[in-house]
Length: 288
Ligand code: PAF
Image (cartoon, rainbow, N blue to C red; front, side):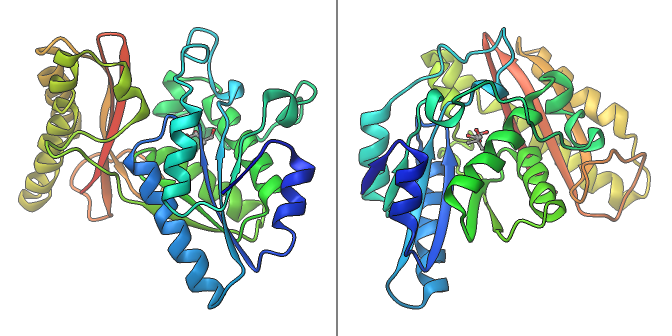
């Protein structure tokens, strides 16, 4: 695996790749990222149908997507370990630019996703987050020029924003969404799980348990033809509050555009949640 910091060097190395598959990350990798890498390898080789495909991962902790009070400075940087893991999971090129490489001057041109997608849910609690994500992903796409890019469904709204960006900007990239990887008890793997104490780590699965409860309420309400969405969402949040969590939202949305529902609904649905456990904010979701 080659490790490359500079955009020109990256372009040179990728020049003759017949197919490029790309996994953008902020490092501190877990098996969810490594699964994306393995899927990238498979997808690239299958598309190429012979030698010449190249897989690329990036590690870049993107200041633009962190609010001033968030954990940019303390975000875990575990480069040595990450690069070994990527090399062992099918990565040909690791692009690891410094801030000066990717943002040599203040990034004043930014990608602003539409408010109806970017100012709800995560965007409502993390203003500017999706501008930061869209801007860096668009820029990384320009550097790597991938044919295929892979993202985890754990960041459900992020995946949707990126799909819409690619579609609206006519970027010639196939976006693949991968299922969330979970620990044996059901806890969604996340870099931020590393912030949790031993006791919090055992408690953290309760977010997915609350979401499972909400998903069950959706199925039951739909089957009965009567469903008080607000009451079910409140009950799910209350279950977490009773265990000393501070939920931002637990909510039922349409998979298609994350719009809310008012009652029984036959569209494909997803339940999404974000809640603080101690100082750590966790997110998760389940398609219903
Ligand atoms: O999901 C992440 O790790 C980040 O938001 C991403 C897509 C790498 C952009 O910085």
